[in-house]
Each structure stands twice: as structure tokens, then as C-alpha cells.
Length: 76
Ligand SMILES: [Zn+2]
Image (cartoon, rainbow, N blue to C red; front, top):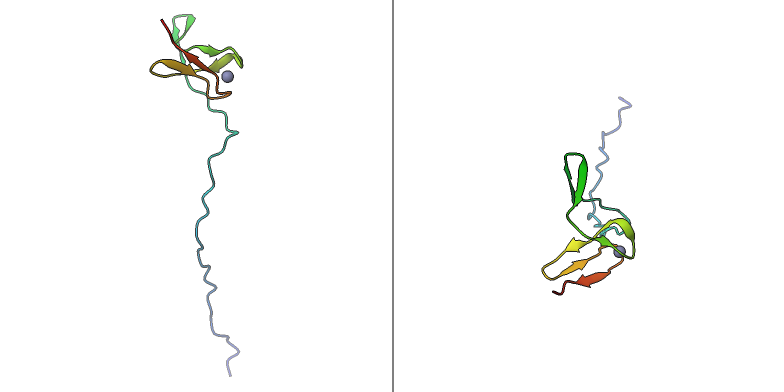
């Protein structure tokens, strides 16, 4: 008599999570300089290719630009 339908709950099955690879286009800005008083002292070299503003990652015996891949081997 009752017009009641069986309460079926729509269960959303969780599928496998799709992992998205590393994004390349996200610019990461690191703090590569220190502010001493009113002067800004740069701790890292800037990339000669990308120009000032793009700092190079300092490695053991070389500096590497993560943006264009420019490498400067530090020779003394
Ligand atoms: Zn560069």
C-alpha cells in the first residue's frame, strides 16, 4: 500500500586516483638573496641567458640554471 520505494543509496565508488605528473610551467621563486639594512646582497649568481632575476642553483662545483639549463662550471 505504501508508495514508498526502497531507499537505495547511490554510492559513488572511488576509482583509482590519477596522478598528475610534475608541472613544468609553475615558476618557483626562491629567496636567493639577503636584505642587509637597505642593501640587497645576492647569494647566488644570475643566469647570463635568462638575465638578472633568474638565479642559478649552486652545486658543488658548478652553477646550474633550472630555467634554461645553463651550467657554469666553477673553475679556479
Ligand atoms: Zn637560465
